[in-house]
Image 1 (spheres, rainbow, N blue to C red):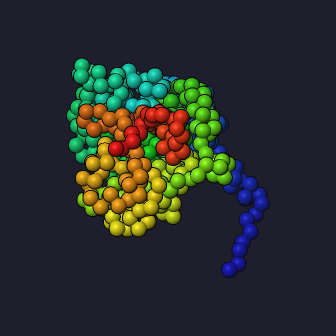
Image 2: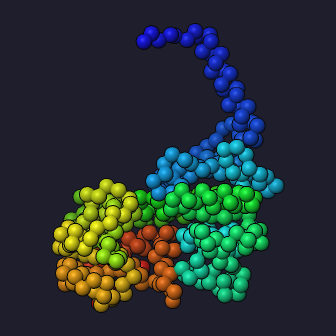
Image 3: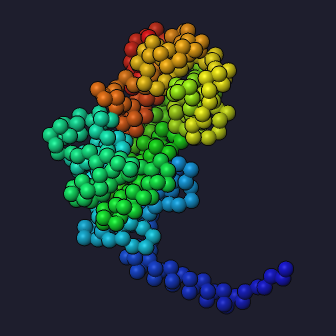
Length: 384
């Protein structure tokens, strides 16, 4: 095929025309022409660009398996500017009334000192935060339900400035559209999709931007990252033995095995363990039967994150065959449910998002115990 060359003069004119159109488009949307990116060190799911009185945020992975569509949000100092524009959602700065649909949102807002802005949550039985529980008991915070059972009439009555959502699948689009039709700004927070503990925690920068607390969030996160990096075991950097670690519990005879690209596997590596399923290069859980798991993980040295079990008896009640696994025989079974409320809500999934250093310390004690350690576990318990 013959390739035609563009006339240099025409090419220059074309580039100038495209640039002027781009500039005009930015001006039409009242967007600054020069934006400075915020440094994101670990997180892969969002991006932040700023200018004076202006913040633009992109959620790059809004739900599992989705890497094509992104959601864009713009925050300005103009409190009257809350209208939609093509391509992004414009949100007022420092919202006063917020709805949180995940317990991790509560943990982030707690760290930012913004719990008093929460007017509603999803799933009150899952919550451990004392301040929020007190507000719920006093009727100051409502439970609006979740997924298909979300109470939109109640949401409208609450007059929220912002709803923080999380999406497991594309069904979240329907929720976003419904809220949009009600003129209620909804923002997707994808912290749980991060493959690393610090990446998940770094989403605090994303939420901080809504309140103009970016600098405070950066200082806090950088201090946390230093503690975490100092504590974690770099492969080949220390001489400790790396115990073989298994996770999970069968449910109705199906064992969902987490892939090696997930956050739990990252915690295991950072604590100097060897994940038994490191050959599963994925983040999604893979269904297996007990026999398959036993062939691969039966000789593991440590077992962690085993469902709702609070004792070895609970574990064996699930399936008697679990007594064949080596960690059950040696007594090295630990579960991440030491901080659980009366309704089964687990604080590991709430405050743990802002305390990955404490989770790491627990796992370091579990994988590399010493006689002087005693009992220093925070999120984990030793099953006996």
